[in-house]
Length: 185
Image 1 (cartoon, helix red, strand yellow):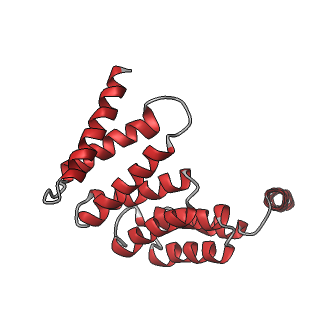
Image 2 (image 1 turned 120 degrees about the horizontal axis):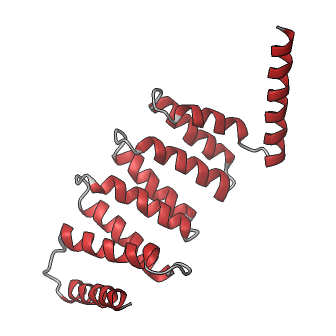
């Protein structure tokens, strides 16, 4: 518990000093330290409901780092983490914006196909926009035809707009049809 108190006090001191001097340019290491502290507070410190204020500060830190140091290899990771945290807080549109920044600015990154798939999920599941979900999956398939997520994206497209019951019924029919074909051979 003393460690948690130390982290919280350390975060506050860092925040006060970073706000108190106008000429002080925040460094990568300061932002990363702040991110580490906030990640601990939000996700690891205690098994209780998420601290929404800390989560919002964490998102701000992720985005601050990614926009301040766009050429750093951590920027793409922080855009993705910002989106994950925004979804956790129910900010689907903010998550879409973060993921869009990722795929626009880092289209060749290893995480870009996952970002397209995550956007599709948010549009489908959280926003109910099947057309945008389909467009995201189409982008993944078109831009990364050899990626391992392409088969998942194609299968996901087949389920868009369908209820879980419809999906289960279609799967059962496919299994039945494949058994019928196998027994006729």
